[in-house]
Length: 184
Image (cartoon, rainbow, N blue to C red; front, side):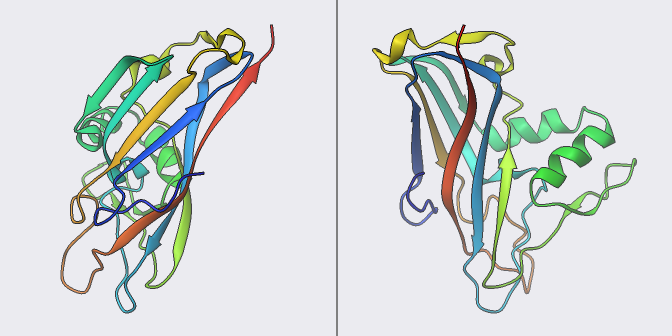
């Protein structure tokens, strides 16, 4: 788990997996808690799929950069618009949930997080070519640097609806990476 991440304080989380086996990258996903810091207004994420909280992701294997994705939330949002409504609905349900989403797609709106409360979400990056490979990643007996993932938080107002009577004050807590380890 990492410390609290917010646009006004610590912006980057670095998560490292060091293992003696093979990592099944097709199972890698993140979970974290989104906390609404407002005492009076609801927080409404721009998308039910929780990619909007991050603007950059860097993946390294044993210290070598294998992927560096800038404008992560924009890219993830574009990709999610080209999948079926059912897949998009499932991804959003694992995130913040949908207030509305029909087959038209233009009416998609995420559920709000009530003031002073928090919500645990899960997310799997769609835009990472490295994570989309259906191969096992050998971790070389845990002797090397392992798999390192850096996530940089979005700007304060880049991830949420900033209309009147909506909160723009948020933080991410308990960021975790989950991945299956396979012994061959």
